[in-house]
Every structure is written in C-alpha cells, then in structure tokens.
Image 1 (cartoon, rainbow, N blue to C red):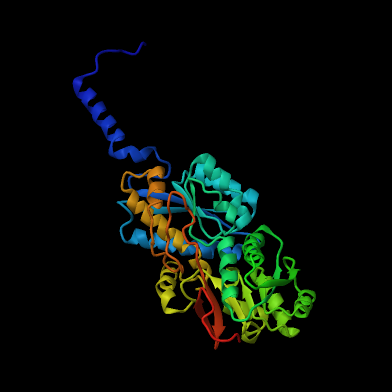
Image 2 (spheres, rainbow, N blue to C red):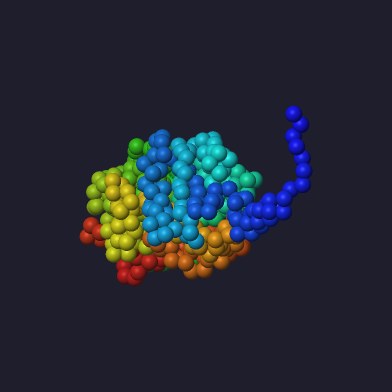
Length: 402
C-alpha cells in the first residue's frame, strides 16, 4: 500500500523549528566528539604493560586524581570528566594504535597522555591529522612539541630544558674548568647533550675533557669510570636512565671517582637512586635536575601527595604520580575558560590564554601562548644532605664544592 502524503500541520512545523533551534544554539557542542550535556571524555595512553609498566599507571593516576577532585567539586561548567585509558607498552606501533582507538573508537574530546618519548613522538602526526588537542603527560623528547603545532601542548620540561638546566648549574659552580660527560646514545639523551655541548662550545672558561658512552641496560661501568678518573675532570655530567645511573655511581664510588656529579631529571628521586646504587654515601656529591616544587614528603608536596592517596590509596607515594599533574591543571583551567559551549577550538584558544598558572606540584608556573606551547621551561637542582633531599634552586647556592 502506498504511503499517504499530505500537508504537515502547523503545530508539527513549530515543534520541528523548535528542535532545530535547540540543536543550532546552546547544543552546538553536540557536534564535538567526546562531549555530552554532562560529560567530557579525556583519553590517556601510556605503558600499562611491558618492561617499563612501572611508569604507566602511577603517572596516569596522578592526573586522574586531579580530574576526580574536579568531578567531586561539581565538574566543569556542569560536566564531569570521564577518563579512557589505552596501553602503548612503550612501543611506537602500539602507541599509534592506542591513539587511533581513543580518537576513532572512544571518540575522546582531547588526549592527555604519553610517558615514553619515542612512543609518544610516533603519535604526533595522528593528532595533527585528526585535529585533536593533545597535552603531553610526561614524555620529554623535544620533537614531540617542536616545531610548534596548533594541536600539541606540554607542561613538562623538554630534554633541551633539562640539558640547559644542568649546564647552567655547572657554570655556576666554583672553579669548574674541566667537564666530563657520560651518556647514552639515544634521542632522549641527545636532546639534553645538544644543549650541554652548545654551552661548552661557546667558551666561558670550561673545556670538555672526556666523553664516554654507557650502553642502555649496562650492568658495569668500570671502563668508563677509569677513563673519567684519568681525565681529572672538575665535574662529571651523567645523562643516563635511573638503572644505568645507579650502576655508574656505584662503580665511581668503588674506584674513587669522587665527582661532583650532575645528572638529569630522570633521577630526581634521589633516595631511590641511593638505594639502587648502594647507599647514601654513593650519592653524597650528586646534583640532579628536578621539575617538582619539592621532594616527596616536603611541605610543598603534601597537598598533592594527599590527593593521590585519597583516590589511589594503594599507590606508592613517589615522584611518578606528579609528572603529569601540571598538564591536568592546565587542561582543567582551559576547560573552565572555554565555557559551557565547548569545542576543541575553544579549548585550544583557552589554553593559549594561560599565563603564570600555578602548576600544582611543578616547580614552574604554566604559560602558554599562540607562539609557545611548551608551558614550563624551567626546573631546579636537588641534592641530598643528611639523608634528606635538599632543593638548591637553579644555580650553585654559594660556598665551596663538597
């Protein structure tokens, strides 16, 4: 039977017109992925499984604690945050797959994630191609955020910032003329080394007297230590991951290489480094970069440690949960500023208005502009005194070297 046709009644036309006006007006956000009238969906990815999974959930959990606190306070402009996590196992191929699922399968509004530098860099083009805002969680490789891109932001110091911080501290140390370096040979190390070598080549009275490679997963650093000892350096810079740093410092102590030693922010958990290396005496002359406002257990960190404990009571209170918190605070503030009629472009525009924003447990405040998406280009230096981590600021605090 043929369907009957006829004139639509005026009352029906009015109803259709009303529905159309609602869709075109306040509900314009409905066209944005990851947004409903009462939710904002944020994606995360990181090494939840695999050999470096120790960094996965703890890092993500710190940021999730910030988002949970926001939800408990009523949300943002009437919406609660939903978190969707995917595993990248610190593998570039798996990272790309994780981001594809978050963007195309889970339809997230933005992504705040990425702890492993190489895996995170592998996802860069995905965010650009899909036009999805991305806040880097903890990865530090410079080329993730450089060159500047409209969709990519970070609030953790890059490798270059870490290297500049280290060499600036070395330059401020008294009577340092001869500098030696021991390092890995991957992209993570190279970004830091480029900044260090650039400063050394510029003169200023310091000369590099040794350059030693320590392989990843090395269990012995005797050869490197003996060569550095022969070089008679005034200071040794080590650009190595925590495990290899412990091996190097253990063997330096064993063979009488006394330092001082200046290391990267990868080993800012100095008490953990001491435990790995064989005791506090092994690290008595070690100084390392740190992008946190204070060591674990300090008054400056207490509110953020309490926040992690509230939402993740089984998590160990260590430095890892605080890595991505600065990004979470930046995301929350930008969501607030973007207003209830939320779109990705409004969110990006709001991020680019952040100026001197307190970044929770981070040393610096966040400033993001249309021409600078690297929000925290500063860190300080820590050492250990009497069994406690002591923040020193950005330069040598005065007095002779130990």
